[in-house]
Image 1 (cartoon, rainbow, N blue to C red):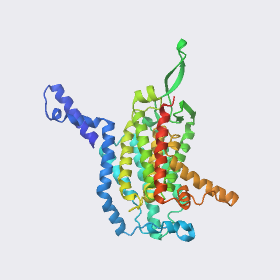
Image 2: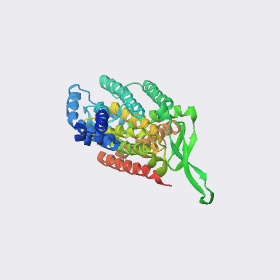
Image 3: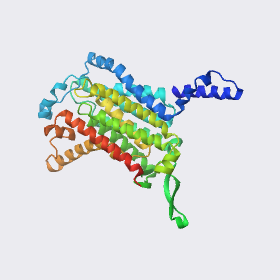
Image 4: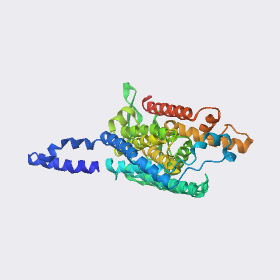
Length: 404
């Protein structure tokens, strides 16, 4: 919407310049701000935050009236943890609808909505959110923690990820990435950095100023793995009040910066030597909307939570971050920036693997945030310490951009 206003104003401004007269377009010259991604990204973040605070209480009241309380696992299932989380019984779930709604509204208002990067991330988020909504609704209807079967959920996640991966791979504007670097012999000067076009199938990491490997067509299953893995990792992290929400903020802000830098030729190609695409900068608007929405949701989700995001929010956020990592060509960096999500997922894998192979558990309980709870950490301590780690990992990931 803001870009449409700018386009209309710019056309009028150009016409006035041609005619030599000054009309309304000159009077509204401040509309020139709308051309800048930075301004629209900041506006999207503030708008999604404001909308969350405005409509959040109404959505929470509606969820309470619909009696969509979060089912809590019984003492037989989780033993001592049931005592620690007993007070959460009845807290409304499906709060992820607030995140999805505010992100999409802010994106529609502030971004160029036909930008292919914005389209694929927004659609992936919405589709994963819809799957999560069905899962949450099934849990509420059955009044237990068993929602959609794991096999069914993985099937639909695979379908969503496959469509997103194919769109990214075959869409010309996305697959046409520009510069990373190569070393070129330059006589007495030794080696200098030059430009080299990279394909969508090439995998990059900031420490290496050239692509690590070219997967070609096999990059599609790699993309699918990222989206499914990120969705499930965020879902596993969402076990304490505000934990996943706070970690989402640091990851979304980091990838918003990566998208902005990747969209500017000089910063990407000449200074940082990271993959460049002239369309990718617009994705920063969507990611700032996600960060603003997460801030707004955290207002209600912080301990003690008034609402949970449920699978509706966690799957949507994971899908959006996974797609954003692929679009910015910083897939491997997600392991660092989203380090908390990775740690939570790995703890579950190790716990299950150890129990099946050795009949012994590595942690008191998985995901790992429950392990620290059972060690005696208060819930707030676990949450804030994990937030601190998330921020530090995000800063470290961004610092790697200019390590060499």
